Image (cartoon, rainbow over the protein chains, first blue to last red):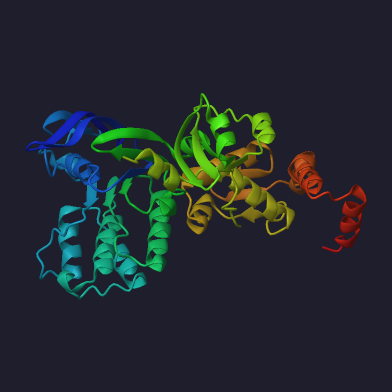
Length: 287
Length: 122
């Protein structure tokens, strides 16, 4: 079971606290989305899970074992890092070969097939690749790793819409053919909202939400109408993200068990709407 | 198969409707095989768990059945079943909002009837 448990983890860099008392479980065989604004601590968390850095406090276990200096555990994970780990003069094909030396389950044929489909020239040096193709190269290496746990940090950085769409399709195909645990950190939330099963929202080093996308969206809705009437509806309700133009405004209502007051809304001439993951995210992470 | 991105229903419920629509349009015929959940999730860019949830609901309603190792098939009589189910919510989903809008625009029942007569061929 490729489950990841994070218990009371704090990470400090000198006086800066990057993560504060994080308690989190990434259930096995799900696609998790790690969402947070710039500098929220997403990459720090991924670096901790993959043992690139160590926690100041707390403990992380993968498949029930500590990952620290544990090759068996580390080999079950493949981490697509934002930065490049290969020497700059390495060719793409050489990088694939090196990866296959470390990850015995690496599928070279699949890597080559994906490279052809994404039109990635494997005889090019990594340093000659554009930002988009660097991302594509790393995404292909990760997908072909066949690791039980795949971690993607900004996988679509620099990719055009066409290649992003191709990547999402490939990710779903890869996942459904061979169940695995996937963590994706991304800024392009709306694009992945249907693909994710769980979301984890980090704000300034703290976890503020961990829930299934379905529940998160089902436990919120928008209400719009005249200012004073919206206020009347919002009385005694929990809400975020109020947006207004002139005399009208719209707010996101948060309710554990949706309890829309349809009669009141009709009386006040208010309109209900659905929330989008991206809008909810923006409202929840506002400073 | 298409999902309605403006729908405020959860994705699995949208998928249930999309599959039902395809059965009503006979894109998926009774007693014949439909595409796999993997194909569905890749095509629609949705989590495979979501597709599975939709299929399980359709299986519970006896609209779709699974044959181990072969695939998923449409039940005989599924089309009729879907039509009956949809008819029940027709008033609530289509008629009531129409009447409400008509009331706002002061459109009389007579005018509505005329409009419906004129739209019969659609």
